Picture 1 (cartoon, rainbow, N blue to C red):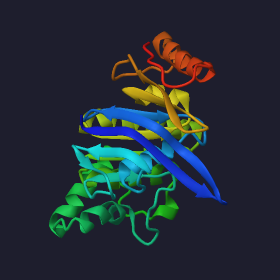
Picture 2: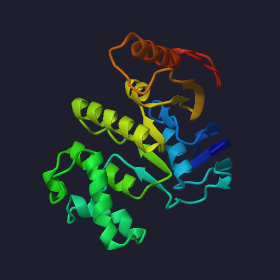
Picture 3: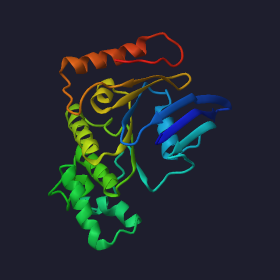
Picture 4: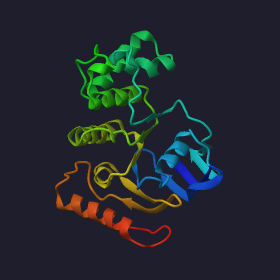
Length: 256
């Protein structure tokens, strides 16, 4: 198994009280999978992502990537957040080159690589613009290009489209799905949007709160091309919605 979470628990102490963010979570992820962590606020999905990315250590249990315990962020993986994280004093091209600089890629190669990924995310011609002259969707495309440019093994995404309007969000969902197929990257994507999860994921990890736990893992039986209006898509969406209304306690196997 490429990524493996075994019986992971994460506890926080707040105002003298212990809070259980993750409660005995186990999960296996194959190389090249697109996994969505789906659930309401407080279900532990961002905590699980942070543990996988190395930003937090679990209180007990284990998190491993290729049989190596995750104890800190790796330069081989990148994380894309909702706030873009662009440097306002750098133009688009220089923002994309930032990660390449940290990996000591020769200057002669950096621009070529950066332009390749700007073209991939549909920003060819925007190289000289600064972040303040970009829309939110364009800024997020720059952040995605910057992440892809360093050729990561794993891309972690924490509700990256959450602040965008619906139309821009849908377009970026299509873009990241196409990129994931073309680049064959392992992507772990946090969302609270059921339709977004069904549109993107190979498998959806349905999480519940109080305490944060996995309720079900659902394989999405849709092909690479996904039509939000098709009967198959709507059927899967409705079945995922039903999972949140089931009163069953603990993990359940679920097949669509």
